Image (cartoon, rainbow, N blue to C red):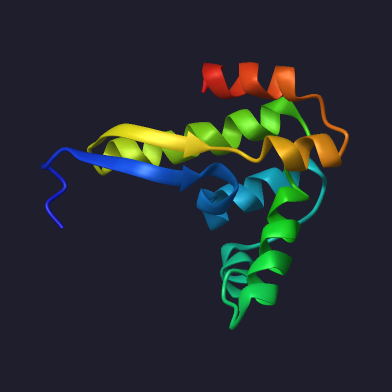
Length: 113
């Protein structure tokens, strides 16, 4: 892939784009020691149920606006390194509401990222 060529990412879910290193950093905020190999293993699944379990596990580390900001910041860093100049990022506001998280401060944190 030519990294110098400008790119666009037209449909990217924040929660699905969290790299293993970021998951480890988020887990460490909770006093949970993970290594990237453990995260990569969780990211390998054979069916939709496996995907849902991995997704649920990852969003369990997104509990504060600062967590969302960190995830977004690292994602944007990675995209910029790949010369992505336009991105449409989605985040699961419905899941935040289901988890009883206040969406407004999360949106503000995402904007800061």
